[in-house]
Length: 320
Image 1 (cartoon, one colour):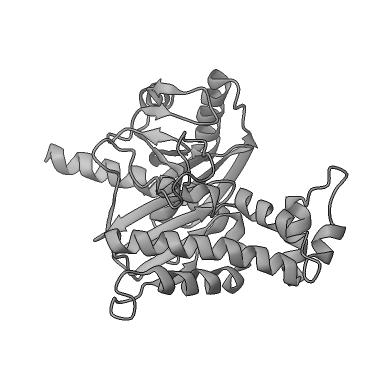
Image 2: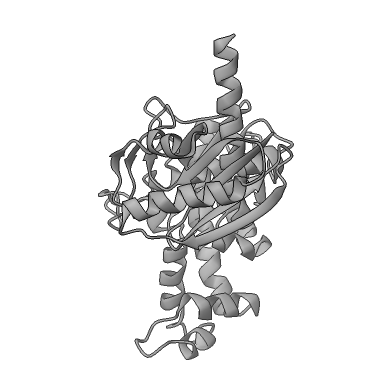
């Protein structure tokens, strides 16, 4: 049963025709018209139609950043798109004549990693996406956790520092402010002032006196000591957050996606060290595994496509 997966990102809307085995058969993308919700709706419809042309398609799954209701239908709030209580599923179903589900983008990515990627051999998995912000997904006993109102698993907004840095959510001290790609850049710019390990970072500063994301990426790939020190600081905060999450969720594995996760073991090692330091009953509590996501940028479309298949199967079961 083929399905279309749509992943709405900050810069592009990616779409794919996906098999039940999680294989991408067709793939398309267009720039995200984030400031024009009508044009964005058009883009979703057009991608869905192009990808499904000539095929029998079960439905369309849509992954979007923001709070989605439990029915996988309404976008309560999207941070980068003008959607407030947007009945997105009803609108797209009316225009495509196909079943549609809408889910949080991290949920879709997490589900894909659980079904087809780094978490497929586990039944309890927690995903953290380390990008500009920090997203999350929770799989417990083989089920995707959404919470009572559908807006659960916002793991980037667990509080780590009392009175800490102001977060975009309105609170202070969230994990997102200490364990995200944005935080990594902050650590790199601070590390550039270190006379012993920060020389390469300092030399990479741009005209505004800042180390850019591209410059930091290049230095990490070159295993520059200052860049790695910044990454270690990031991993230490993420590991601390994971220790708190483990006390509540007790996952068998933590999976890390997002752009920063490509650092691989250089990121995982400080995460593990910090996790052990802050884990309640450390030394006596079974320790989760730590893995880097394997599906990378395709996780959103693959997960969204599978979630619409599950929705259709559940609807059929209820009808019986």
